[in-house]
Image (cartoon, rainbow, N blue to C red; front, side, top):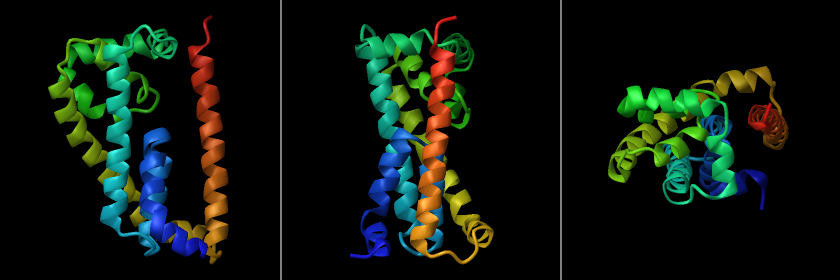
Length: 187
């Protein structure tokens, strides 16, 4: 089985998982895959939205029902939590819709919303709409800039593109993890 065939068969699943765990990079790369014709655009857009929605629902439920767990307590101790709580109390609907688009608060926000008085039904409805908008827009950016990515990297074969993308993605994840760790570390 070739790498192209693997991406055609499992690309949408990879985008779903990547969007759930990482976010923008996976959704953007899904758009690039769609531009290359390996996966249908609607599949990667739906997968990105679904992965983002699922991850946010799990974090919301962790805040709502598992606030005593150590990982949830670490989220609540994060410096961004007070800022998130303030925005959420002032503009609850707008904040629930927009948090996934704001760098640095995406993971903390669903936990904070779960700890708040926002109803589960309200969160599900707004979160679903926001996830669809996010998934469609980020994969569209990857799709539109697919030609630019291809020109920037030259006419590399597909597996070379993927190796570069995976290396970039891993470097980005390490950078973000270190930044989050530094922010969560008590002063």
